[in-house]
Length: 383
Image (cartoon, rainbow, N blue to C red; front, side, top):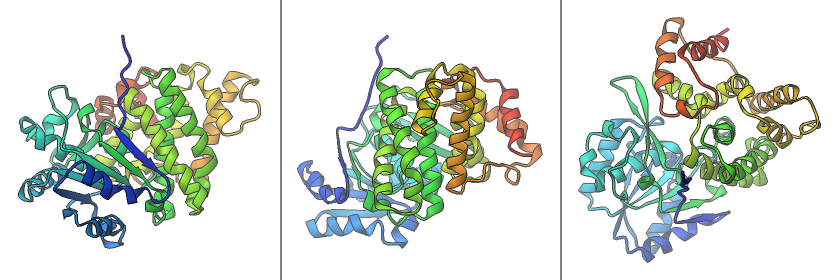
């Protein structure tokens, strides 16, 4: 069976990359763009860095900021109406996963009205045509939504998040500019950076991994291991390398899948509004421990990325433990609390575990998973 790989048509990287936005809009002959960005980015002037460029170039746009941190069905429907009301022909998504996930769902519905019921987008959708063109500007170094074919929407009514996978939703152009990430507070930088590490590690060990995806994932792990601490301190080199690392991780996992960490993290966000990156980070050492015996020699590469001295010569079981310990230490060093003690009420564990088992990411896990396994992992973090 052939392995498919889907990437952006074009991407720009490095400080000042957003200056290329007006030229891309004009070359593509867009007449009116919907700028999708979350309220905090608008409030603190981050979105304005892009809209100022549009103003200077005389490009017509409408700002849409009815977007929550875990975007909802209602946010998507509001975005669809805003797009139609302003006769837009493209979307510029500015932000983290919330803005880009909203833009993807809006873009797909605009060109595929058969999916006006947002819930119909769940899973691997195969009946769509390319979405309304999206130009993506990430402001966090974590989700890599600007280069993935995945997005996640929250169904508040049913208290769940659902994953959508569609190669027709990928942004046509990405502008990965570390200057757009410099205003992220330390806590958000840490959480999104650990989300990127989760993408890289889960993508590296997932059942669908192969040589091309491995190349991206191991490089991302190396960059994150060496640069996340610096990025949290707002060091320019750390910011620059994390912007690249999270994008590289996205190039890989978007094409091969993830695993149980994301399946469990999605339920934590759906039930308690826990930020996605923080949820992934909190779970990562535990899920790595769960999977370690089903990963062949790959934990040696992870350990080596963290400069474990005996990564390629030591006893494999010991090296696997050292890899888990190195990831745990990185999380703790950047302020992640590896506990769910004050997050999950005991009476929710059964329902949480059942929902995590049904999540679209779970089947990619390298080790077969049961609801009892998931429950045990949740309980271990609640002590």
